[in-house]
Image 1 (tube, rainbow, N blue to C red):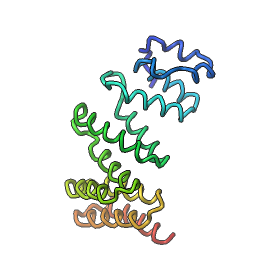
Image 2: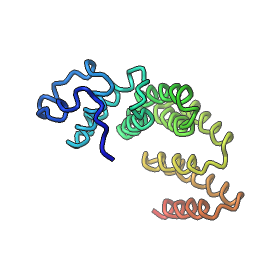
Image 3: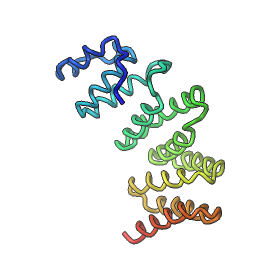
Amino acid sequence: MEPINYSKNWDTIFNMPVNELDQLDLKTLDEEDLDALSIRLKQLCDDKRVISVYETMLETDKTNPAVEYTNIFENVIIHLMGEKDYARAINFLNSYLIFDENKRNRYRNHFIRRNMGVCLIFSGKVEKGEKIIRELINESPGNFWNYHDLAFEFYFAGNKQNAIYYLQMGADRAKKVNDDFWFNFFTDHLNNIENE
């Protein structure tokens, strides 16, 4: 899908030499120009700068209907979690929770709360993080993506014990409701991790 040419400075941004792009003051650009800049930077494979542009976009009032804030929030949060910058990830998750409740009717509530719990745990607020995760699972025990994502967040953070815990929890739930796909998925991954 071709990007829509809606930024008043679209041509300027897409014809600007790379060294001049680096000199742009993001705070002086409106959301449409920031969006255009993020697309140009993606084309240049400058992922670090794309995240900076996204962060600036999330500091706006987030009311431009042409901007997909959900994707932007999630890109920033996933990047920060990958960088182990949990404090900043928590700040964006809090902002995302408000945006999601007000603008998206809680569409991504589980993603937000699941990652909030993980970030709190990894930043040393274990009890608070575990409480959020526990509430989320109790509220929606049939959401297998919660077990899946929690298991893999912990696995890739080097916490195999918690990865196994959530895989087992998912397998138990899948068995209880006779969901063969998820049961096999969780047990296969459990076996792989236990046999590493």
